[in-house]
Length: 185
Image (cartoon, rainbow, N blue to C red):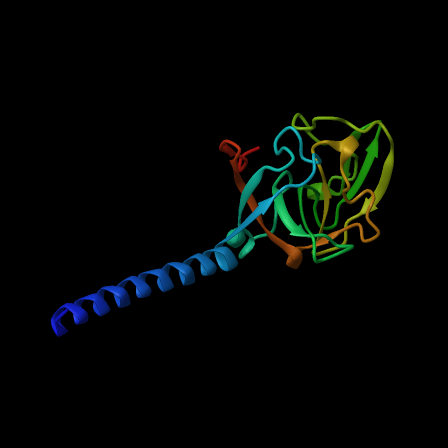
């Protein structure tokens, strides 16, 4: 093999190496800064997210605004921050959440002091027990699963509230098995 052919092979290998290194750096950047890619291990969010579904959440969603009621979010579990949880935002900062006969009521939303029942057509398996009241501190959120009778959520945690800084992103869609948009649920 002559010098010219060797030089061409080396240039080709360097070109491939640059492309692969760039792709790896881009993938790491996207996974650490733009999205959260997670597997949901339990049935706490049935029927919207099933056990072992793979989901993608958008990390930048709450850069300039806070979570909204009914958002499905990925966050660090308050009782063990090494674990990621996926739940629905139910109570917002300054509100009081009460559960009576399986129905969730909010007090203090938009200055309203009478308990307002939440729309909950997404709930898969209601829990008929009573819980609360829970006064959500400023900068925190009260989370519940959609499969209420089978969800380890704010009602049962030692640290009942999720701080905004521990919310990693809003779930956009599940992609395995099958694709399902979850952004507007």
